Image (cartoon, rainbow, N blue to C red):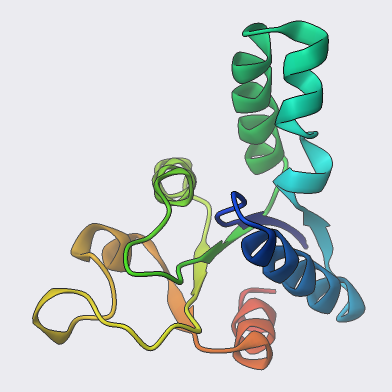
Length: 140
């Protein structure tokens, strides 16, 4: 099973957590696509290609999702990262299962865990890495 890991990647803490999720899944025998590693660094691409890099990053990201069997979406934060929300919607539209990972205890409006649009698009919501692996194995 090939897993696309969707998550925010704009701070060091976010990138390190993404790497931790990736490492845990690989240790469990899954193949992963991690955009921050497999798409390429935006700063480097911008130096080489200028503004065309933005489109290239977008296309590489979509191709990674297209080649994946399932999307794991990291849904932590006061509000879900906009790129991650897009990736959840894209995966849902393509009929790919999405498993959410929310280790954050904050809640959305009226005590709900997530925005309703995201909640309806995911198959399951895991609270930690072990629950995530359990949910992925149920799909397999």
